[in-house]
Length: 171
Image (tube, rainbow, N blue to C red):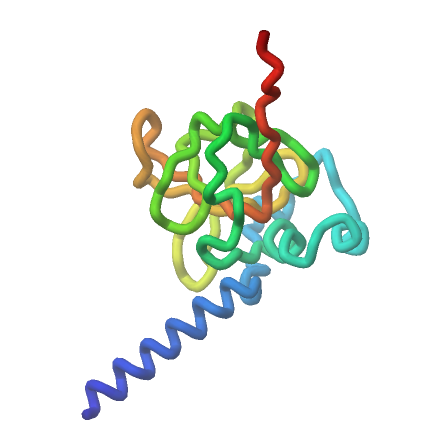
């Protein structure tokens, strides 16, 4: 009986922690190296709130995380470019997207000079946060469990990006 209570309490605590993170709370621990950076595109908090949807603002500006499988970009299969929803910088080519089974759009490589990285120790986890090089918007995290040729998995929030299909004007 005692073990059952510990299991239930532990499960509830983990669930609350996960919900807390998905709703964008507790993520204001921007790493000092990112916080000290200057970005090409800088706006006031009010300007970002006016430009972005509530979900985009939570993710890009407050380092929140969307629920798994929430973004339509997770299922996007067309050729094209995934760009930052904050400043429109091209980030990933569709050719580098793969199905990771995580519920978030995953890529094995960003476009050249598209992203920056910072240390993220939120909730005691050591991870590498990925942000837009131009506006500093939080995109997601990179892990070393991806496919060849890089072995990396850029696990991105779909709501932090937009998709631009490749032009179909071929002759």
